[in-house]
Image (cartoon, rainbow, N blue to C red; front, side, top):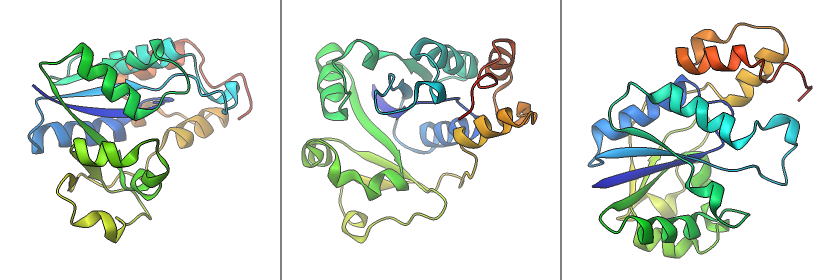
Length: 195
């Protein structure tokens, strides 16, 4: 199978993530898309990032009824910090029957040259790039055969926006998949700390 890997903290997952994921899996050659939840980053404030398994659970709830979408905790057991090139190598060893591609926003492409072994990723994998507000695709990447620009809907919603809304007692129910929002609300996530 052709698997697309959508890396992120998903802190929390929101409808924008699902719109992009659903679009990419339906309008490309991918058979499945895996949400790869990134573990706790030691450089981030712990108050702003939920526990790995709580974020994984929200993703699982958000996609439980959507075909071709999966949640992956693969990076939880890998050495930290997580480097995409290492995760890709691990996945290829574990699932030799699959072909893997990356999914990233245009904002990530801006800093792609700073990634560990970025040239190996660029040479060895298809990268599906979706638009992000206020970011353009760098000219040097536009004509490369492994870079596939997808015309997914432009989403201006962000996880930080949702966290900020919760801090200010705003209802974010319409910005999140129902089951994930219910779990977040029941657990009082993001309400108790200042971000």
